Structures are given as structure tokens and as C-alpha cells.
Amino acid sequence: MMRARSLLPALLCLPLVLGGCASTTKLTTRYLTDTPVDASTRLLLVARTPEANTREAWENTCAEVFDIPALAVQTSHQAMPLWYDAGNDHLLDWATKNGHDAILVAEITGMLLALPQVPAQNYMQQERSIGEDDIGSATWSFFLGRKEKESPPPPEIHEVEFQLLSPDGKMLWNGVGFTHEANELEAIARSQCKALKKNLQGLRLIP
Image (cartoon, rainbow, N blue to C red; front, side, top):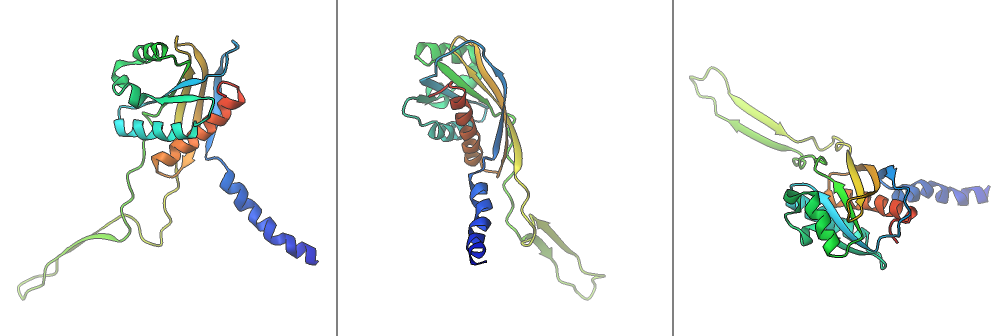
């Protein structure tokens, strides 16, 4: 009986430990080349979006996740600030001339983040006093946001397509990720790139 009681705290903590380690991104492979290729050692990391700040934040976060000793990673926002306007041909040409053996492209244009939450109990109110000749009071009260006791909205599910290309434009791998994460770009990018790293390493496409 005493032994069973001693195991109870550990059993109660187990779901918390497992939950903390669980990934918030589910990654599905759609295509994998059937031609044997060596693991890439020089990777150009590209986030496709017209929003420069979003592109930079996503790429920087992902580059931190892909910090592998045997892999040199360069972000496109540093190498080619105007790549989005120039298109894929310019991207592939630049990668070839600069010795990259693979390009990882994340199509994040459609990944819309929800608007920032308005703080709770945010009221706009206007009142006027009642005089002797007034028929009644006129009071307007507007409530913005949510009540303090109301639960926050659930995390959004962000769908993003990923492509791993060779410098000559050949598709090496294609997949789609579904991220169930809070409304914070760096957290979303970190979750997505951890899943990408695990998948690509498992397929031996990166070291």
C-alpha cells in the first residue's frame, strides 16, 4: 500500500512531462524524391511572404532551430532582401552562384495571425447629466475585449507548405505542416522548424 502511494506523485506528473515535450506541429510528407541525394550541408532558408518583418522573424527563429554543426544556414532576408519580388528564378540562380546545395522554402503568406487581444475590461463610456428639462438620460457604454473571467480563445491552427529544392529547381521534398500554437510568430516558427528538422534528418536530407 505504501509503495502504491509513493508511485502516485510520479504517475500524476507523467502527463505533464509528456505534454511539455509534445510538438504542436504535425508535419506530413507529400513528396520525396526517389533519386539518392547527399545530405545538404549549405542550406538557404526562405520564408515566402510580402511582409518583410514577418519574413525576417520567421527565418531568424528557424535558423536558430537549424543550428547544426554540419549544416551552414543562410537566411534569404539577409542575402536577398527583394527576393519575393524577383521570383524563384532569381532565388535558384543566387543559390547556385553562392554554393548552396539546397533551398528550404516555407510558404507562410497565408499564415494570418489573429489581431492582438484587447485588454480585459476596456470600456469607452460617455455620459451627460440630467437637467430639469431633460426627458431622460443618454448614456452610451461600449465594451471591447473579453471579461476577466472569460477563457482566452483557443490557439489558431496554421497550415504552411514547405519545399526542399535543389539549386537547379528539382523538388527534393515537399510537405505540409499544421501548427496548433498560440498567436505568437516566433513560437509558431519554432514549432514548425523543430518538426521540419526532425523530419528532414530522419530522411537524411540534412545532417
